[in-house]
Image (cartoon, rainbow, N blue to C red; front, side):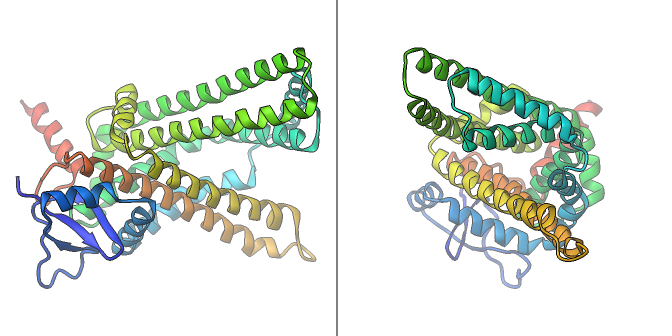
Length: 361
């Protein structure tokens, strides 16, 4: 099959399609196109880095800005507001859990220094907040991820986001998307649980062997650093698995396996994407904690505009993260030369049509 690839200033786009030759008057498309030889095409795809994926994401956002902004305000902003404000989090549960964590840390040989206390407090807040916000994650946020993936796929198919068509398509595949999300949550919980068990056992062993508390703290930090890399890889696999569950006819463990195979050789790019998104979210969370929860001017009127502004900023970071995961999926898939060549239809629409035809038969 003769293939062409989109090339834009500053990097290549991931989608490979035979019809992507630049036509006169097609100003509505966000990309420029040119033909490449097989050798050049493979080099361009494999050399696509995190910065190029970010640039591609911005181009897609500009091409269909109204659709993505609607997704952000209608689906992501409510979840961001609940998450940042902790309005449904019971502080007494957080306090009790943090005290229990500090007792476990002290029992395992870790001295109760400020960094240990803050880590226990932060971990308790994250666990309780995630548990309380889970209904929002499994509905609005999950729907927003599916909508973002659909919009990115439509952009590569030169189509605008159609809300009614999206609702019909997602209704057909919602169960497998939700099933994959449950697998993602299970993997994340298992990773964190295994880390906590290993950390307690490791620190206890060091304390029994007679190591100084300072040495135990440094060793615990080293273990935490190693876990961060492993956990980041797990999150990357989970994010791509969610994209796969939307765009491909696999779900659950199969989507996770497909994701781990697909990103082989591109893990560094995924880690940079994850690092950038994590820093952005942590920065906005810190601003919200400092400017809205802690500070207020006079009667606290500053919270009236700073709070919503930071919620919008956080929602935008979440939106960009979801978009970059979708673009990263297309980039990995293009490097494996697996993109289907369906004229004028998105992958989701093609799957829906195939499902309908099988039902008729």
